[in-house]
Structures are given as structure tokens and as C-alpha cells.
Image (tube, rainbow, N blue to C red):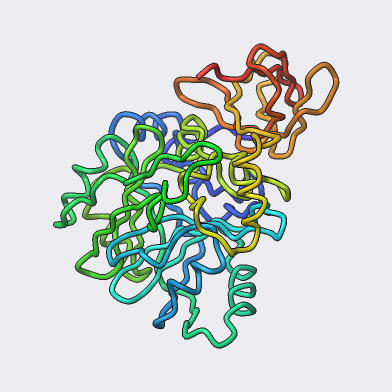
Length: 361
């Protein structure tokens, strides 16, 4: 249950769910609605320091991950970042990696609570490859909102360029439709005191991820002179932007195309990685069985948001599950859900005790 907020008081996610992977960071700083509006209209800094960060070094670091994951990485240039996926043999998502190549190191940051499992997998697959995999002393904070670019200028750096995203080709496209490069490229800018800035977006809102040395992070963040915002605010904005979070908006059988991760993290002309056959078959021979949808919740029967994993039903039949749920400052109670693709937008749905409808956009 989400409790009443005390103004000016930071409350951790663990206060509401001690077992949450997000338990160590702030849910809010006393006024989650105000914090969310700050992200929507100005700029705020969100503590995401619970993400796991690795440093991969050695001459084979790019080819090593290229051969194991879904993205084209061998052409990733210095000062560029992208996203890639570790898939199961059947093409289901196991890990999402944000990778950033800078000064001879490939920095990898992943969902909280997953880094140990990822390291075990990568170490097992290393064999004689010349790559070293070590924990990195960098923490992630996300400067978010329309004022983020102006705020970042206070760091004395050139603000990174907008993301460069390739269009996803249609089924049975001709060979050569995709160039041999990452399908999405995020620009990076190194910071004078160590670490770097990576630019992406949540819908129309710019986001600058600051990966900072843990020992100097507080001083760097103070330079920005922007208010903090809790993870509730960030997750509400992310949900409204229809961006899935792996491990929250996915289950053990989620395919990349079901949660709109193809453009961001999958190169469809690259072969010979685990799960590639399923990815290609689904893309070329038909649509995936499920799809990511934004739901609007009525909030009449209950003011409690459905928890992750809540079944979504239509006419008494289970058709999907809830991932992220949030109270959005403008949209009201919403949820991201993975539902059967053949469920139309006008189908009455139920999520727990709430009636729900699919966002028409």
C-alpha cells in the first residue's frame, strides 16, 4: 500500500516493499506529484544508483558481446552507447544491457539485482576471449525533463546529441536494408572528474544518464542545482511513454518484439546469437502473440494500484498481466501491460479490482 507522504521527507522504495529490487533508492522526497510535474515541465535528478554497472576491457570486448547478444556491436565507436539483449535459446528476454564504449572500456549497466547472474553467464561464455569483466565503481543518476539539457550545461560539457535510431524494416526485407552498426546510438560525453553522460529519452522528454564515480557523485550532482525526484515520478513518466522495463514489464517468455525493443536493441540482419532464430521467424512470418499496451485504470472500485503480475481479464478470460502501475500527474492511474495482440482497444478489461481500457494512441 502506498502511504500518505510527509512533505520534505525522503521515503525509500523498500519502505513499501522490502523485497523490491528498487528497495535501496528513493520512492519520493515528500511530494511525488510535485516531483513528477517537475520532470514533466522542468528538470529533476532521479537516483538510479541501484543499477548494476560493469567494466569490460580487453581487445575482444566488443566482439565478445556482439557474439552473445542481439545488437550489432563491433562497429560501436568510442563515445557511443546502445542497448542489447541476452536472450534464451527460444528468444525470450533474459537481460537488457545498456552498453557505452569510452576510452577503451565498455561500460555495461543493467537492471538492479541482475548483475551477478549476468556476470556468471558472461564468465561462463568467455572461454579464450581476451576480455576482462569487473564491477565498476560508477553510479547512475538520471537528469530528466525538458530543462535537462540546460541544467547539464552547468557541468561545463557539450551536451550529447540526440539518439540516432534506425527504422525497423518490414517483414521479408532485402539483405542490406540495415547497415552494420547498432540500430540505436546514444551519444556520450566524458566528464572532467570521471564518468560520463549518456543521452536518451522517455517519449518527448530528454534524459541524461550521469554515470558518476561513487565518491564524487554528490558533488557533481550539487553542481546541477536541480531538485531531486523519486523513482515513483520517473517510473510514472516511463510508463506513460510506453517504454518497457525488463524484469518489470516482461515475464519469462517475453519476446523483444512484444515490448517494442526491436528498434532499440535488436539488429535483424545480424545472426548467430542465442535466440536469433525465433527473433527472425517472428519478424518475417507474423506478428508476436502479445503486445505492450498502456492501460487507463478507472480508480472507482479501488484506489489501490494493481501490483506487478496482476492478471488482466476480458470476459472472465486471462489475456495478459500488469507490469508497471503508476499514478500519473496528468493521465491519472495507468499501467503498462502485456496482453494478447488480438485484444482490441474497445474490449472491456479488468486488472485486479480495477476496470481498465487500452490507450487509443
